[in-house]
Amino acid sequence: MKKYLIQILILFLILPIVIYGEYMKDNEIYESLKPFLQELQGVKELYIGSSITINNNIQPLENDTVTIKEIEMLEQNNGDLVSILMDGKVSNVMVRNDGKKLILEIENSIREIPVSIMPFENDTISEIESFDKDGVTIIEFKLKKNTHIETMLTNDRSEIIIQFYGKPIEIIVAGTDDLGDYLVLNNLKSTEVNFNLDHNAKKLKIKIPHNYLKEQQEWLNFNGEYIDKIKINNAIGGLEIDIDLSEVNFNYVFEEKQQALFIRFQKIPEDIGEAFFGEIILGDAFMGQADLIFDSKLENIEKTKQINLIKKPLMIDKASNSLLLAQYNTEKLQIIDNYREREIILDLGANYSSIYKTAKLKINSNNIREIEIVNADTTKLIIKSDHICTYNRSEIDNGLKIEVVRPKEKFNKILMLDIGHGGKDPGSIGNGLIEKELNMMQTLAIKDFIEKNSDIKVYMTREDDQTLTLTYRTDLANEIGVDLFLSVHNNSHTKDTPTGSEVFYFPKEFDTSSKILAENMIEKIVAYTGMFNRGAKPSEKLVVLRTSQMPSLLVEGGFLSNEEDAKRLMQDEFTINYAKAIAETIIDFLN
Image 1: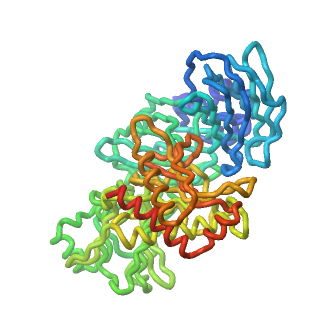
Image 2: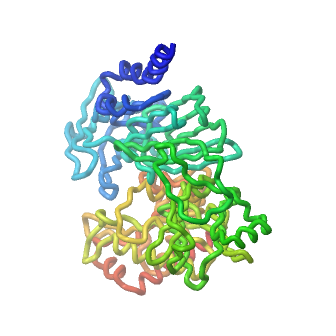
Image 3: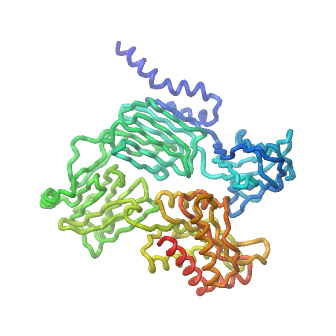
């Protein structure tokens, strides 16, 4: 009887792989990952992606015949954005892919663009071809890589915008084995995944920026040990996985292997104490050994005093996302808010290894995923979160209390400053100037003025010379929930005659705050610097404006290609006045 029972169990464990394998036998992605998938046990749900994912935002609307006049690629976006320009309102655009080829069918149109277009050097498109068929213009983009594609129209329907960014996620697997429930995300690392666990609602939200599905997934009958249901959707900036939980008393732990991220949901050991002292040896969580979690109550002062008497130097309160340190030196302590890495570092300024032993402590509260204790020249407690947090610091009778909170819980007014370009992307170059360097100098001057003259909290997308994607910049702003996003750039042109400053905003029919702010900013820039006024301009093309969820601007200080502009941009006096004009406009707006 046992033999037959084991055979039945094995059949149910491998059945999903067999079914999907038959269904997907011609799928290139499935075939390449088939050996990896067949190693998994207890598979319940499986998603197989594609090399290209498309979100077509264009709705049909009957109009007169239009003429397709031009295809434009924006070099400042590294070939990632294409505009198709027409002389009227387009009726409809059908979008599909054939392998690594994006195909647009523009109905009720006449083609005036060339049959073949070789784009400038870029990372995405190798060739563009077009032809006519029964009143439909067909445009084919041959692609160099896997990518996600968004298509949309400008408000007047005279321009088709095609945005290439991110990547399709290849495989998502969910199942239950003898260690508990698990989720597998192919070709991802733990640093690319953001978690938000809501204990009260019994929900876990996983955000994966820059990755996309070909179609929504709903796994409503999962019925695992901890997981009831799973829903996976494309959202702004990437995909979201919403998990309904049967209970929240579990650890989730990560393992990266075979170019995939394994997320395991495991039972919390019953013999966990209320406080931590001494050396902890952690094994491999995937071998069933327990991680650590704590649930002491800092509000209970009598208990705190008793624990301190027996020299327990660290206590953690999950409910309030707080730590209490009994041993530290106020004069030597440094707290570093490393928000872009979603961590807060407490550097005690000396070696406390006899008190705080090296360990990795799994907390899994709302704002604290893990606390890593590192002992070197100094002892550091690294608080790691699944989303951007900050901290409140207070000294009480029993020690130093650090409360980990979301930025909106602490700050009333928040600004995100974005230094345009950076790293391998220098931006414009002209008259001895490099845009990325000029952008940094100007942005830091803006930050300095705001911090000295207001109570606005300023976050930065970068503070050194590194390459960032466009959507990474707005992902940070959206995650924090800032009140205003400003991207600082300088301009260039193929001719040396264009000159002046301009401010771009994203046009919204029922929200004119960005437009008014842009108009105020350009007026003040011109008044303070004497630059030519190129105006406040709407733009639906600029990715950082389109993907931000708050009022947002992109400012162009001047033209590096223009000799007179370049001379001004080099001067310290210009930088001071330019930064003051922008900063005062922002302070007035947020006040």
